[in-house]
Length: 169
Image (cartoon, rainbow, N blue to C red; front, side):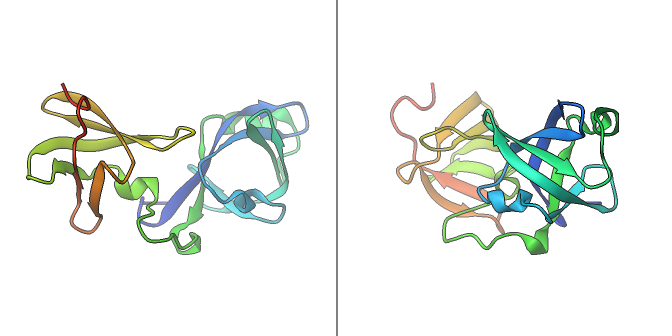
């Protein structure tokens, strides 16, 4: 595995679960079918795909069992590692929808051209995403709503926003 352009993170292994080789996975995709039995996933740091044997929801995470990993000792080294798919296998998104890694690193500026900073993180909340922007004025949290985000130009590397009262101090 090499490169952000080639792979897309769909989950992160939180820890081992039980003694039969299951792992707890935080899902990083809106497409849970990525973890269905028979699915093939790359584990961070490995150059081959692992097959999902089973997957089930459990207390806000997924419990996943991979082929060939049959006990806790086999999966313990996977703690903290990301699960990836090949980018060409990514689901096609609708208009004005973006993968998180397409947004991270964008230059964020106002519609008037004032530089606010770089988008460094996306926080996923129940209502809407929040974009974390690090810039000359420090950290800004911008809600990912139509009233704020006016334009996203992934190819140009810029996001243009309208600031609502109180968003920046």
